[in-house]
Image 1 (cartoon, rainbow, N blue to C red):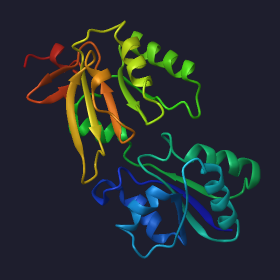
Image 2: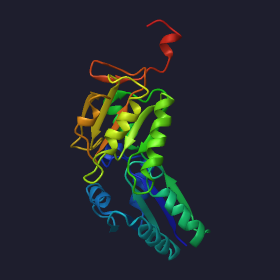
Image 3: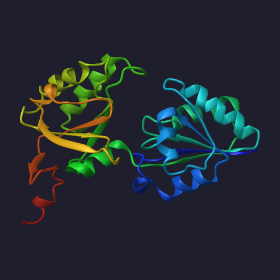
Image 4: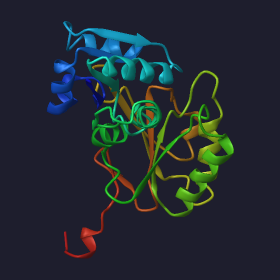
Length: 247
């Protein structure tokens, strides 16, 4: 019997990939992933053996990985960012639990979009924060907006994944309205596109202006809490050290 490494490879740039993720991909007999992710990995691992499927074929990818590992192959099942944050780890473990409970599986963490985006913006996640996806492909939009409201009510910084697509054009505006019930319109917001990749771009805006901001599926949106401020072009959420010592 082989093994499956569920690999989070970060934003895609080799500089942001962990050593363990790189090792798992290099040692794999086959690398399985979403077509776009495989295209990214080919740039750093041109000699690897790849298999890919399009979006929405996550279960098929997992079953391909399980079948090959049961046949003795070492498989790297890849996700961008972290495999356990909106990635492949959960569904793979569920399938293994039912279909091949003795199959060895290792989940290898990666740098997720919230961390990459936060580093680009400054230090917006220094205090408690919530990560919420605005995609309703897996979760009803009513549940998503309820989570947004609870996080806003608790004064969490919010890292919003999948904020907008060609079909989902109004969810970010809806979320901004809900958050605006609990914090001011001038609350800092940062938007990072293609974080950690060569085409990376970022800008700062405010909660009031967020509905009109340019945001797409390649973006992550970080909404500050009531203490977040911008200084020198950097978005900062205080941790509380300043209350302990004079700056």
